[in-house]
Length: 395
Image (cartoon, rainbow, N blue to C red; front, side, top):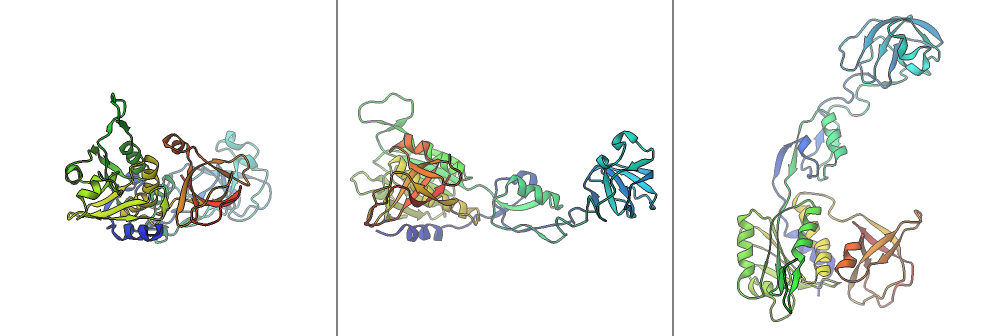
C-alpha cells in the first residue's frame, strides 16, 4: 500500500492545466483567474464626496454660506469657491478643486430642504479632507487587484470591474464524465428483481463534480463483463470530457471490469486509507484523465473528495486545492487503525461558537448525506479518547 499523500501527488502529477480563455468579467464569476489583474484606472478616479451634503472651503466654525452650485453624481462641473461659498453635493460626485471638506446634510440647519438657498453650517468639518474620498485611495492604476489562481467570487469580479478592467483570462469548467460499473445496477425508481440495486454512484459523483465547479458531459453505467469501460471512454471523449471517473470495478474480485479491461491505460494502487483503499489513475492517448474509485458509495465519495476534487481544481489552475480545515473536538472518541488513515463523515455542533464539536454521522449513504465534513483520524495503535481534537475538512 502507498500513503494518501503519495497517491495524491501522483494524481496531481498527471494533471495538465486547461488552456486559458478571455471572458467578459461579468460572465466570469465562479471561474479561476489564470493571469493577475492590475487596475486600469485609479479608484476612485477623482476626489469624490463620501456623503450627501455641502462642499466647503477652509471652514473651521459655524457659518452661513452662499450655495453656488448643485453637484449630483456624474457631473463634470468644477465651480470656483471661496471661504464664504458652498456647493450642494451628492455622494460620489466630484469634489470641487477649491473645496477642502464636505459637511453632511445632518450638520446643517435645513439639510436637503434648503435647496440652493444659503446654508447654515451648524457643525463645521472636524478636519481638512473630511468626508472626501481621495483619488486612488482604494487602488492606484497598475496596482494588483486580484492575483492569479483564485476562483472569482462576486466581490472579486466587482473589484475588477471597478478598477476599469472589462475582460479577464480564466479557465473554462473542467468537463467530466461519470461512469458507474456493475451488472446489478438499475436506474433509481425503476422496478428491481432480486439481486439488483438502484444506481446512485453516478448521481452522487456527478453532483460532487458540479459542486467542485465542473461540467458533467456524460453520466452512464456499464456492466461487469465486456468492454463497457472502453466504450464509455470513447463516448466521453466524443462529448469533450477532460476527465472520466469510474466507480466500482477496481478492487480484487473476479468481476472488476475497470481493472480487467483498462490495465494498459491505468495504474491501480492500494492506498493506506479507510474507506477507499482500491484506487486507479491513468490517461488515454488523447490526454483524458481517468480515475477508478471504489464501488461503495461512501468510499467513492470520500475518494472523490481526496483525489478527484483536487485534480479538477488543478485542471483549472486553482491554487486552493484542499477544503478549508479546522481543529474540532470529536465527540465520543474513535477507534484508530494502525497503518490506515480514516476519513469519517461528521456533522458539526455549533451551539458553542467557542468550541465546535464533530459527531460521526450514521454509516451508509443516508448518514453521508447528513455530513458537513470529513474528520481525519491518523493511523495509530492508540484509540482517540472522547473530545480529542481532530482535523475536519469542511464542506
